[in-house]
Image (cartoon, rainbow, N blue to C red; front, side):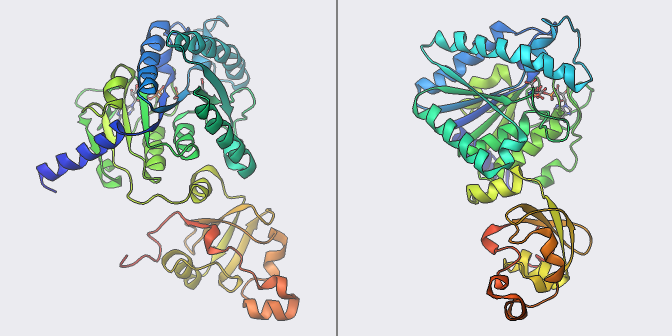
Length: 388
Ligand SMILES: Nc1ncnc2c1ncn2[C@@H]1O[C@H](COP(=O)(O)OP(=O)(O)O)[C@@H](O)[C@H]1O
Ligand SMILES: N[C@@H](CCC(=O)OP(=O)(O)O)C(=O)O
C-alpha cells in the first residue's frame, strides 16, 4: 500500500469515528483515580465535559467506567490494589457509589443525567439477560440519559468475571450497536512495547493482526488490569462488528472523538455479522465440545453448512439443547461455536449416523441438525478455508 493510500485509509477510520452517532467510551482506572486511591475529580470533570459536548452535538454516549476498586482503596485505608477477590469486591462496593455520585454531579453541571448499569459476564452470556440489558440501555439512551457501565464487581466470581473492562466495553459496543469505540488509558497510544521501557515506538494504526506481530503487549500499570492485551482484544471484538476503535489517553478524549490524529486507530472489518452471531462468538463460552471429522470441518467452515450427526466423532461436556458449544477439528482447534439442538447425553447415539437413518429409526424429531447453520459462527477460518 502506498503512503498516500495508507493515509487515506486511516483518515477514513478517523472520519468514521468523528461521524459516529453512537459512541462507547471506556476509561480505565488509572485515568479516573489518584495514586492515593481516590477519585480524580478534576480529571473526571474534564472527561465529562468532553462526553457532554458529544451528547450536546447529538451523539448517543455510553460510558464504560472502571475505577470502582481503585476509588475504594483510599476510603478503606488501603494503599494498593488488594490481591484477594473479597477485598477487591469490598473496595468496588465503596468505590462504585462514590464514582457514580461524582458522575451524577459532574454531568449535572451540563444539565444531564446518568444511569448506573452494572453487568456481569454471565449477563452477557445468557441470551435473555443480554436482551434485557440491551433494552435497558436503549431506553436510557432514548430518555437522554448517559449510561455509566461497569462490571458488577461485588457479585462476579473469579471464574466468570471480566476483571478488566476492555472486553466489557467491546461487548457493550455490540450490545448497543455503537458506531465507534474509544478506549482511554494512561498511555497515549499503543506502542511496539511497554512505553515505560526505552526504545519503543508509537503505532498510529492497526489494519489487522499482521500489524501486531512485532508488538509486545505488556501488562497493566498501577491500578489497571489487563494492560494492552485486553485493549487489543477489545479492538478485535469491536472491529469484527465493523466498528472502528481508537485507543488513546483521557487527555486526548476530545481529539479522539473529533477524529484527530491522536492515539492508535484500529481499522474495522468490512462486514458486520448479526448481533446474535456476535453475541455467540464473543459473549458466550462453549458449555461443551463437539469433535468433527475432516469432512464435517470442511462442510461447516468452508461451505457454511449445518453440522450433521454423520460428521461427529466425539462429544465432551455436560450441556443442554440450546446451549452454546464449541466445534473442534481433529487437531483440537476450536473452529466454530453454535447453539446445539440436543442434550449432551443424546449425542453419542446419534454420532456417525445419517439424519435419514435417525429419522427412520428414532423418529422424525431426530431428523434435525446437531447445529443449524444459522446458529453457527466460525471462529477460526484457517481450517479448511484453502483458497478463500
Ligand atoms: N505495547 C504497549 N503499548 C502501550 N502500553 C503498554 C504496552 N504494553 C504494556 N503497556 C502498559 O499498559 C498500561 C495500560 O493498561 P492498564 O493499566 O490495564 O490501563 P487501564 O487502567 O487504562 O485499563 C500502560 O500504562 C502501559 O504501561
Ligand atoms: N470493574 C473494575 C475494573 C477493573 C480494572 O482495573 O479495569 P481497567 O482499569 O479498565 O483495566 C473496577 O471498576 O475497578
